Structures are given as structure tokens and as C-alpha cells.
Length: 154
Image (cartoon, rainbow, N blue to C red; front, side, top):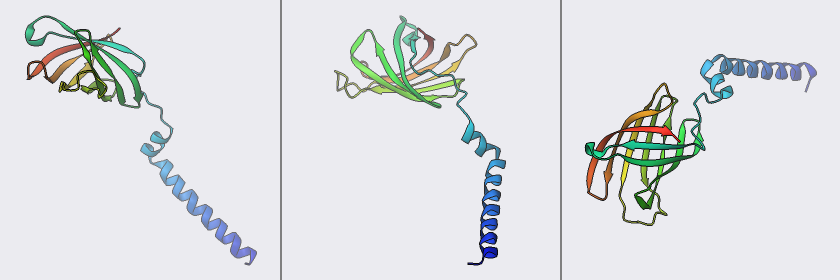
């Protein structure tokens, strides 16, 4: 192949490659996703206490241990002192302001018949606590409950 033709091929490939890369870099969302680090505060490795009053009765508590976080996705375990036979898995989304968690019994829980499932929806407050609602089905009484809930770091 003639040197002039080879130089033309190399030049055109370089020009085309530069145009493509320049176009991609010019899109701010592409560059931001490529180079950005998550600005979301990390919950990984932290322990929180959930408090609520079912139907206005006595205060109940649960403990949530966040075991993993990948960008906005969070994972953990939920335990309650009064319900030793069940450990719940929690997973959800945290964007820095809102925290949504789904809970369900872990498959390794001692009580294999438990169908206690539900969701938390919290909004982060200025002091770092979360305030929101829990809605879930409790296997003990067979009812769906909706309670105001507060989540504080332990």
C-alpha cells in the first residue's frame, strides 16, 4: 500500500475517533457518570434503631444493621429483641434525603412460616435521623399495620 494512502487511512481513523470521543465527552451526563463518585452518604457498616408505636400502644424497637451499599442501593439485616426466631433482610434505595427499605424474613430464620413483610419510607432530617412510615403485614395477628416511625443511628 502506498504511503500516501496509508497516511490517509490513519488520518481518517484518527479524525473519526476524535469526533466520536469529543461528542461523548461533550455530553455532560456521560462524562459525569464516567468520572463521578457517589455523593450519597454511606450507611454501610452502620447500626440504626427504629422506633414506633403500633396503633398508639407501647413503643416497639427494631435494629437495622446496614451491611452493604452500592451507590444508592442499600442492604442489611433487621432484628427485634422480642422476636428472636426471625431475622429480616432489608434492601432498598437511599438517595441522601429519602430512604426506602423493603423487609422480608431471611431464609435462614428459625421460623420458616413467618410471612412478616413490609416497607419503610423515611425522609432524612437536619439532625441526621430519619422520620417516616412503616407499612407491613404482621404474621402474628394477620393484619396490615401502618405506623409512624423514627430511625436513629446507634
